[in-house]
Length: 60
Image (cartoon, rainbow, N blue to C red; front, top):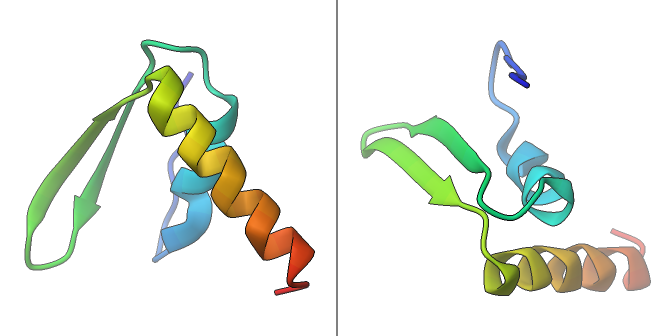
């Protein structure tokens, strides 16, 4: 699967990290930094889910 976003959508990575199968890879560009490559692990998936839950609990 590929998701292509035109423009800046910084928070898109969070739901991808939370819901993609373990072992999946997310690749995106970081302005003035370069390419970011994230392999989904259980630890990263749990971190993303907890982060999203904290945002939902604060009604952000």
